[in-house]
Amino acid sequence: MTKLNENLPLGPREMRNTLNNNFHLINEEYDFVNKKELEKLVKQYAGEEINKYNEKIQYQIQHIIVPPTNHINTKEVKKYGL
Image 1 (spheres, rainbow, N blue to C red):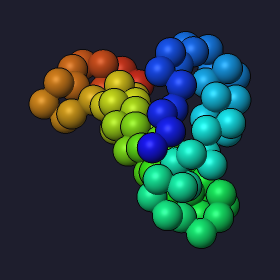
Image 2: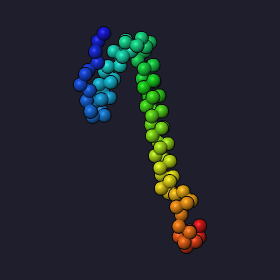
Image 3: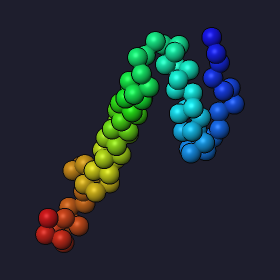
Image 4: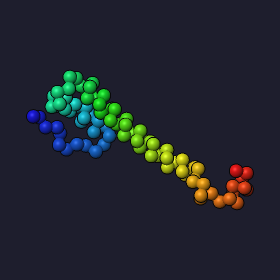
């Protein structure tokens, strides 16, 4: 078995280049038919993780903009006509 580079770079561009250069090793190890199949799986996983993170951020933003009703000051609500 051929080993991947053990010292992975921390920069996003360098990390991407290292992964691209090593995709063929991963493909051989896991018997993927082609490079595109593995790339598709990686992109799918990354997309799912990004969506989870976005949902958390949207939830937090929603509570900043519209606080729960038990925290609303009734004086301020009447003042602004809400």
